[in-house]
Length: 330
Length: 285
Image 1: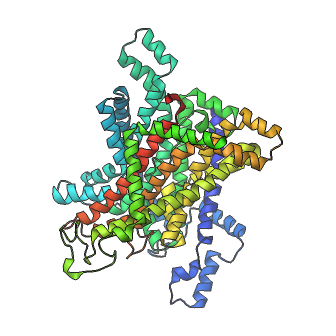
Image 2 (image 1 turned 90 degrees about the vertical axis):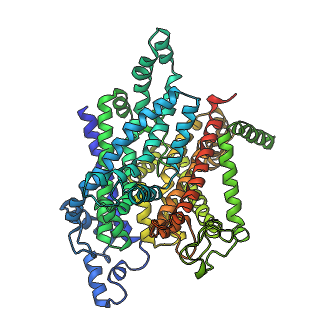
Image 3 (image 1 turned 45 degrees about the vertical axis):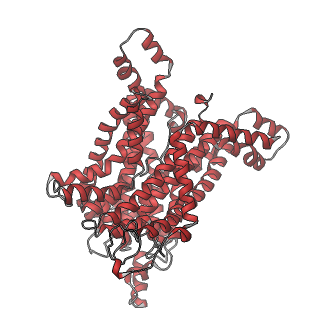
């Protein structure tokens, strides 16, 4: 077990290095001169040259990379051009809001999605199943930001039940969480259902039924347990998708989290903010995937054995998980 | 001989897809949308940027079936023309992503060894950045325009196709007919292009169909935050953003474009679901 965790931690190093490199490349692929863009059209050539120098834009990319890594290690992501505040401090104060939004939404999706999927699977091919799956498909296909706007319009403006935006009371979190999680409830339900239907065809379910176990017991003890493994393994990925969703929900609902900060940085071309947020959000995402992996290696010995056999992350293919990031993307 | 077999395979797929009413509905809606997008200038009752100050925020009426926006532009016409940008984002972005992804996946899966290892590790790193975040960031950095939005969407969707293709190639790679091709001294390029890729495409078809939907969805989001299609050209996401400010008084301005996005994505998903079932050998009869 210790060996597995150590190996998995070791694999994080190239990933973090890679993320840093991509973040650095973001500046390099900018068409035109980033320094000119930051200072605006009225900037003198001297000021542009000075900024290019501070940003290290004229150095070779590897020199910049090493320099950048040195800064990251010290928690120095530079200073925002817009607010003149250190990016790192700002991100730390904003992080709890995003974490709260993302983790509660994830919890809601799991708690509602799995029972819904089991319900649909146990009523396979009835109108209940078809109805539940058709409605889920609607939620999967909906633009989240549009749905959020409709929620605000209906519950905030029309009925006046809930606040339109802000984070003053706990009620103001309801709409953002509903908006962020509904699509994922649907995704988890669909996945649980298809896994359940898959598992029910297995021999050990036939055996369990044959030896006279009651239906409920077969479903919950034998089928669900096995059907859930692939579902929960994609929860790590789902965290990444939720971060993407939080970007926009935070803007719509005025939550002062990392998402709002990122979007503000992007629209204002505030490079330190862009680099800092992409880095922090991606590292957060990688850590969550690591935690999910480790937890599941503890729970399921098969995963541990597999990673021992081949030292790469092949478990996704090996365990026949329907890897479908496109479908759950929205 | 090969041609007839291919034809009957397609026929077989269609026969099985036909039984799924929802999938057929998805296909019909999708075909209609493509038709509307192509024939947009002929179908739209008004020009998409024709302003009419008297019709500002006009309610639905025979002249303006869905009403008009602040500048008096006909909403229906704008929705019809808007289908173009959305479908372009979906189809072109997926074409880019699928071609790159298939190339990477097929090479990695076929050659295995260090080729495979390196490409998969690079994808690991690439995928450790949340997809939507990368997409928005790329679009913002390249500069807001339809073309850059398509590039950003395409580049971000590559890993899914590459991984799926690789997994699919692995199941085909050791089959007898590949061995036969090798026995008659076919080159690697020929084996990959002629034998591996066509036989490994089945799972990709589902992914591509659904991918078009999710690119339309993500594309509308890019436009919504102002990184996609630029006004006055209509696009559903942009129209939702414009309607957002008057959500209180005129909710339909944001409602209808959202329904359009949802319908097109939904039909892609329904068709994808249907294709998945039709291609599943276990459900074959």
